[in-house]
Image 1: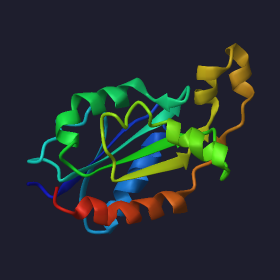
Image 2: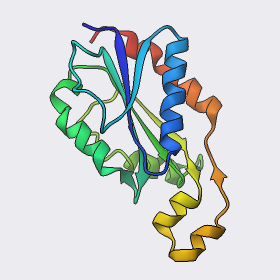
Image 3: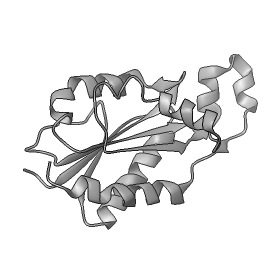
Amino acid sequence: MNDRILVAYASATGSTIDVAAAIGETLVAGGLAVDVKPVQQAPPVDGARYRAVVLGSAVQHGTWLPEAIDFARAQQPTLGRLPVALFCVHIRNLGGDDTSRQNRRAYLDAVRPLVQPVAEGYFGGRFNRRGAKLMLPGLLARFVPTLDFRNWEAIRAWAEDIHPLLSQAA
């Protein structure tokens, strides 16, 4: 079995790329060998290549991006045999109240039947003009300020927390 960890992600506007990179950097700093790749470029997941997988996606319309769900579905047989941690990058339901937590957990409803995660992480994302163009008509997007809800300390702490879960032999 390879000792590498795959951090695979799907991003709509770039925010999730940065989060995946921070997770990968933190795991590397903890002594793990890591590949950080978009799901479209991620190699087939098998025990000969990776000992564990961290899989994440931006959230749009309350769920992961289709390409991330498709990746989980295509790799399901192998992901079922490896430790897998899942993460979401979103701009809604950021609060600490029960309703926000319940809504965040629902982001993974399409993925949990495919993968039994050892951990789940939920991180605020960034909303900028590129994201606004996906949601707002025409010229309105030009006037949207960048709102960055990413908490790098929380992202790195989560990556440190999952380190021992990913380091275990599958």
